[in-house]
Image 1 (cartoon, helix red, strand yellow):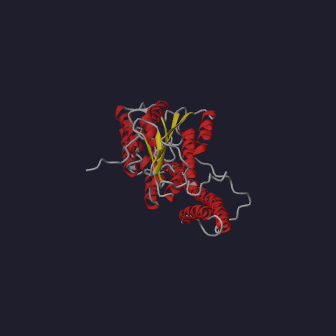
Image 2 (cartoon, one colour):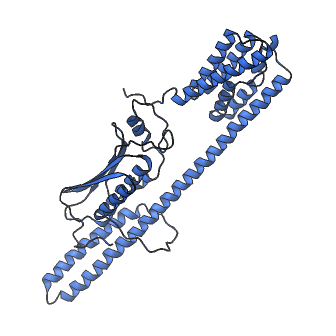
Image 3 (cartoon, helix red, strand yellow):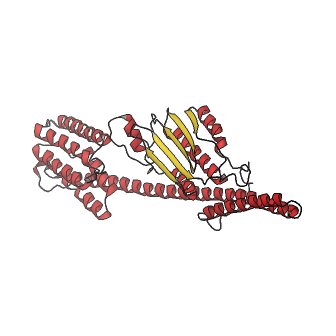
Length: 409
């Protein structure tokens, strides 16, 4: 049986809101009761505090919490003479229902919040007069504020999705520029090798054969790269007015590690295995993964350290970027979309809130690049704190040197 992944019933912020609301209502009722010459009794004070403390569960059970607050308000009214009121606990409970429930439930909650806060005041079973009118105005203001916030949140979400789509479109345009570089590079090589083979075919068959072997390898690599890239390109993209950018590779990792150090993050690069040339798209993918991972670490990991490890193996190349995640991330607490997860230490909270589900499209771009090369990407928080990004990219033996050329720079 798997462990439950449900969120906790309440958070520290919920507890602070509940205690604050209980204290504010208790203080407010005590002061107004003193002015009216009717000190607040112990039963009424207890009911006020209990009503505030129920707010600790308002996000899990908003309708039940509102019902409890209204019922305890009736207890306060009947426990002793109190002045007309629309307490802070009731405001928060009604606001939470309006933010999280369907319109029908919100309508019922708003209607209930008009008469019930005045039930029992002055010994009247059915309230009336200016107290009910004041309750109606307060309920309309609270519900209206909640609905306005919901509308604003929907607009923000729509804008976020639009920005994510634009970012993905830009990533695909960048891939299209890279495709232009790669294809032009290989086709130029094939053209030169074909011309050389034709020129040497009659008087130097060995040189012609060598040129044809290089031509065959370059053509195979170009075809493979075209198939990979064309799978994700969209038709009808806007034409680019700027010349295509040069393609970086593993040899440029030292530069971005140095830039990361200059930006204030302690960054270290380790290279294991026998260094060898990689196919241009594989080398570019390695570079982009490290670049994006270090950028995310600088944005979200605060004052931490990052370690980059590039490993060459006979049939693959792996790259790993990890940070110790000692800094605080923005958003939840922090995180591109995770809430403040309770834990047993700052490292665990940091790791939990840095899960890939945060809403960023940087990880989407990395996964897309790695998948194009037939590889896999792992991106997850570490148990001891921090975050790890690791990519495995298959590289056939001899790939990247079949055409005997370096990356197009």
